[in-house]
Length: 367
Image 1 (cartoon, rainbow, N blue to C red):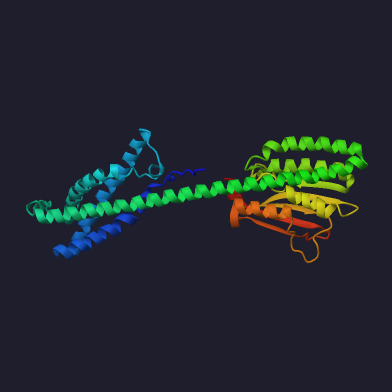
Image 2 (tube, one colour):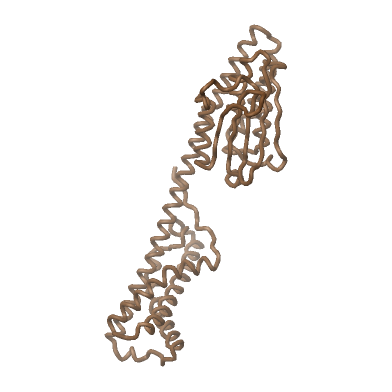
């Protein structure tokens, strides 16, 4: 798989001007120092001439870079460098040379006007000095242009690296999700096998709900993200399936604010946590218990919690290292990096049980 590079994001006029001045001014100052050492002329006059000539050339080069890039795109050309506004030296070489000559003439005339000096026609009487100045101008123009070439290539390489990292993360998520779906299905089938021998009618009901659950989740689970409302709906389907087997021993409640219903999250993100609550929390207790699934916003953070009133965590164990929690941690790390957090700890209230808490960046979730 080849990762595509993203074109440069649009920039405002002040950003463009600052980027050009940040490159052009140091080059102009260096040229002024160099010419001062060669011709023993006044430094400040050379600086004014250098700035006027250099920035004029730079403006022409940058204008030509954009125009040639747009022309090549209209003719059907493409590629990573064009995406970053560099048509290549084949096209830019002649233009840089022409821009150096035109920019020199315009900039020298402008500098003379600013300093109250006559037009610099005297340079024509000294071909050697004129040649030296033109060579310096052309070299400086080429060096400045090469800076933009290097910056464009670095930007293209960074964009390609980001695309490759994004593709690797997506493949990792698909792999982790493919591990989760059979795990959930095997647990359900194991429960169904127990019911077939003890309560065939409830087993048939559970099988019907399993078929409906799988039909509803098959298409949704293939997406990389889905709305938080869909995540809660799938959990509701799953808990309805489990309620067939557990009966009144299982109760559930969902708390999802309206403004968070469309926030995208990875499919089946909370599923293993709900499974853990049933398997390790509610099932070991004769009376069962309650599962509460909720979402809330804290500033720019989406907080998701799965809380049960079951048996709680084993003594001395800060969090389970089982498949479910490990899978959640891996998916969060793959998709969000260190911008997401996952914690599993005893519930802080007096009802006992465990509390699983996930924190995701809302600005990432809403991209």
